[in-house]
Length: 227
Image (cartoon, rainbow, N blue to C red; front, side):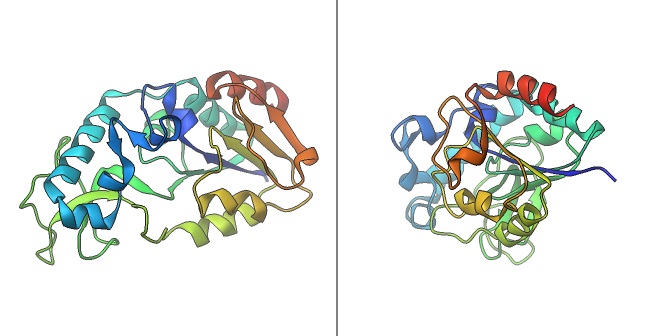
């Protein structure tokens, strides 16, 4: 049986595909304060602005392409049972060919009911229009977990981390909870690799194998170490 390799990915892996995030810009995301476009309160206050914001982000995601870091994780499937847990809302892991991907914060290429987060739908094209409704008659919005909302997949992700033979963190500053706490569920004896130009603070820092590089270069080094 292949060893279980669990990978937690963040903004850094998609940045090299040209997708910007609020991580690098003092709380601004494409010029917007995240609390004006990424909270339930913002949606109630000005749904048209929020809807348009995610429509434009979706257009950017669909125009972006997976990079060598995404493809490197696919390559690891030849040698390991790879499970990806991503904080990202893009679908670049899937388009690169990864088999097992969990999206902690939703995926922007799907819509969801404003009434119930479990009611999600594929989107035809890049735009969700005001007036488009779910089967319950509620407005459709981006399938994205906003600040102040629960993270439905966090328990599943925690269980996956508990079973990791090897754990890899790629392109995350570990600044957003509860996702940032997942590394603490990894068994003490399992090797932990962190790939990022700025390695975040973690428990048992001495036990971490540090690869202080961008995601694409870091994955090349990881492949050399693990294959």
